[in-house]
Length: 181
Image (cartoon, rainbow, N blue to C red; front, side, top):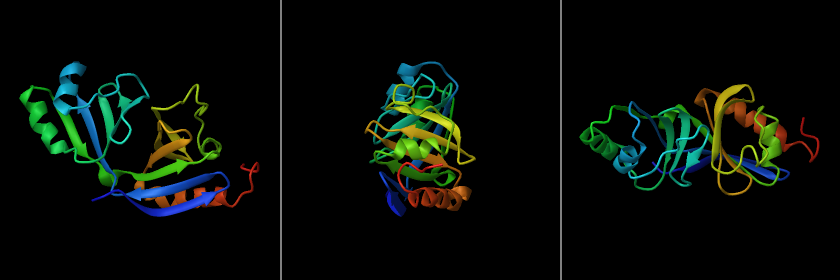
């Protein structure tokens, strides 16, 4: 299934788009050999906490030896299985496409809007490009990723809360600039 827009809203200086069809895999590895792992997957994985590697296909650090991978193009995780097994790497690989509601947030005011939903320090010096973090966003457990394009974020949240988050963003879209709570 292709990544498609299913909902969008814009406010003063920001826009939010909910996506469906985003291909996601969660990988947990029980080995400490980043070079062999990168070779098996055909891509590098971040090894530093709260960092990401890649833009279109993006691996996000969740915990030591655990990543959420936002897949693009023709990458096939089922091919990873054979390569990981052939190298004797112990791992868990699960498709979690339906495990998240995915929102793209962009625009010059996006950082301010997001800051009202979570306690992360979103200043580019602290949470710059290619960073991610688990957080409570609008009170819901989420993963926030800052993309490499300026003022662009991707939010991964519990799919049961997508209506709540749509309402939360809609409320912010109706507020005049400078009055965000």
